[in-house]
Amino acid sequence: MEWILKLLFLGIVIGIVRKYPKTSIALALLGLLIYSQKQDPVEEQRTAPTEIYSNKTYSTPEVPTTYRFKASRNSIEAELGISQPVTTKRYKKAATTTIRVGAICNDGTSSTATGRGACSHHGGVAYWLYE
Image (cartoon, rainbow, N blue to C red; front, side, top):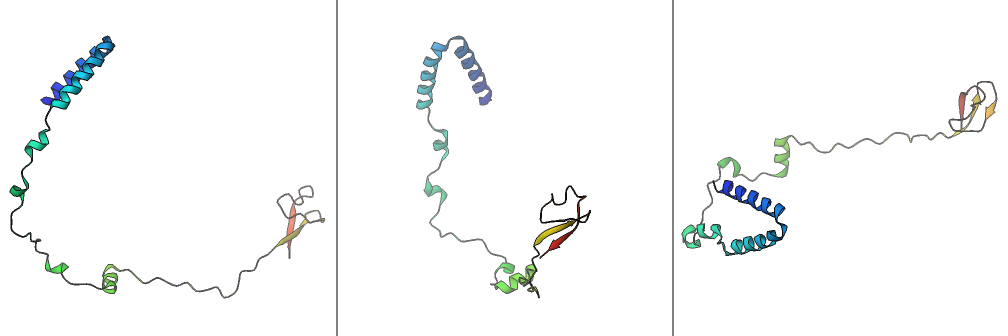
């Protein structure tokens, strides 16, 4: 119910501000004074710390017996199904690097070009020549 009144008051204030902009400054100051005089309702609801806590020591709730054991890392990994990292085998021979040095064109001529445009005026590349 209170929020309806606040919304209604806000609508009235917006209407006054649009019609009378100079009086809106006075309304803003008046609202600021009213707001600063208002007491904080949260502080009224708070209770003293002596009412919340007693002189008794705080005890933690009982932990279920299934969580009481101390598990090692290996047993946790086995329970969760985490496997050890797999090592990869090294290649038996190093990859050979082939360097393109030229091309033989479809019309029989040779070219030293190594890019896409090799033999472009000779019918295209028949096969590439590698080092």
